[in-house]
Image (cartoon, rainbow, N blue to C red):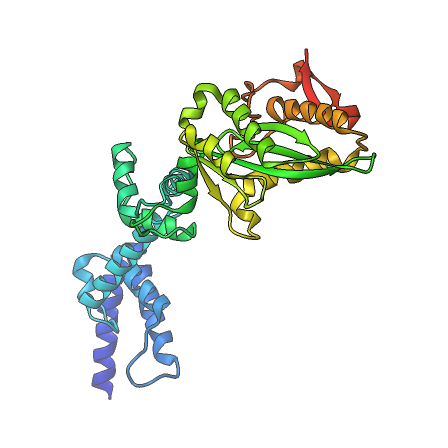
Length: 360
């Protein structure tokens, strides 16, 4: 026992002399490593020490301040290669977090590109995501085809539509310039009679033509109004190919013959399907709500005058959604600064309809 004590005393004295010559920094690091290993061994755990993430991080970081020659002499719980592998993992995760800070995943597609993709899909229902991707490439917009597909799906648009037939909105929009629609509507007068009004509307421009007012809409009278319409259209009648009308007895063979002479085909609506003539029905409903249901009309003369004034309002002021909220015969003006103008009201048809204009 005495010899063992002497041996331990001499070896520890030599170790103390060696430690006294070392630098304070890495000596302190070695002490911290050994102390932490004692803490790990003192835990209640299986015979093999179980190191968590914090233990590995500490044991991989502190040896960096100890000289390489001394590291091999340390009594560590893990092999040097294992510690080096832990250190590489820490550095890799640190730089990965720093490089991905604020921009995880694929870069977000800019909003104007997303809006453009949705616009191309809505304006061209037959285009798939590959066709849209090619169109964007021709415009110099760099985006992946898979990104185009995901944007269309998020917008509720089929990225691979069927191309056998055009969609109904596209078909009707392309044929709107060649379609007219006509319809009769009635107005109850104060003298106890009922007047019939025949109106024709253009699908493309929403321009309305009130052909006539009568108490007895016979077939001959309706055919004469068709002749008046063709004279009013003039050369524009050459682009009209279809006239939508219902199955009323007023539209006789003479009416169809007048239209056929101008190469216009009369298209009859199905029974009890007002949606087939929705554009004309929509205008008649607006005329009733804005004018006819809000005033008392004594006779046909006053009715004609009110309808002419409403027709002027419809053409030159009332906005319509299909032509970008513009009136049929008046385009939208340039944007103005309201600080330099005043808005003045102008009343029509006895104050029932208001129009607003800018005044400097």
